[in-house]
Image (tube, rainbow, N blue to C red; front, side, top):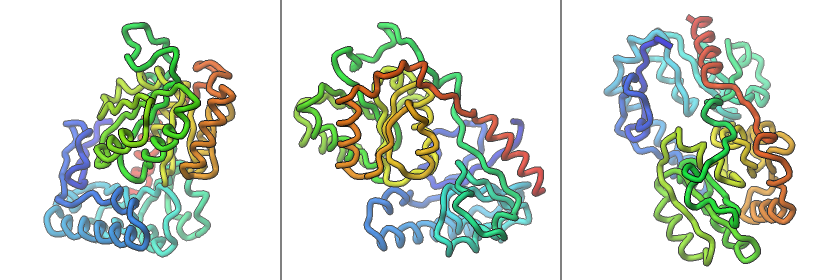
Length: 336
């Protein structure tokens, strides 16, 4: 949109950014997924220490981009609002879900707030909601993520007419609970002819491959690794069912991309998922466990729920990223 942007991030969290964005990597471990795989209170302690280290190293080494900014836009954890001490620029913070009320004091330091996916409904503090804010749904690219009729040459080799293709797309990290998906497939493979496709990479890949080898007897499981974003719709359109099994989500973009392609989707009733999955587009399960996911897939496959409507009938058109960007820039202009 013609603005100069500098992005300060954990050092290994910048691989997909445009070369037009000045990226400043902070030497700091990305402990988010590790923390959510650890039991509380250990997980909370890990997150807190990681946040403190990130803030400390920015204060020590990377003060100039903040001090010279026109706007500082922070996303991640509320304690990042402490960085406003390094700048006179308006400070806007993004809120992805209801945080611990103890953190509200950090949010109140912001000059503006962006509530992603309608999570402002979970906040009742008028002094917090009186801060200039916008409610924004994460966008997708509707021209890329849409139903497609795949020809023989475009259709992935794993997609055969005989097998029901189940697909996951996202980071292979503990919080995504891909092990639950593999376990559910292992429990159902004696009854249904399945193929599981896993798009994405991450710290858990080798463990998940080992798990699949040890408990899945017959079902082909394809770990395709990191896939170019423009190629993801091909895999979604070649799939019969998209699966999400995360322990935590707010407004999952991968789910919206699957539904936009008309791929029948199964996901747990967490975050904004019940608002995203409209009737007929997928199946929401309440019990976010291996047993709950297995029962959901059992119901879908036994009754052919994923075949009741065509891909084009199931497709939902969501807002695109330009809509989100316009609202954010409008908030920036208001607080400046």
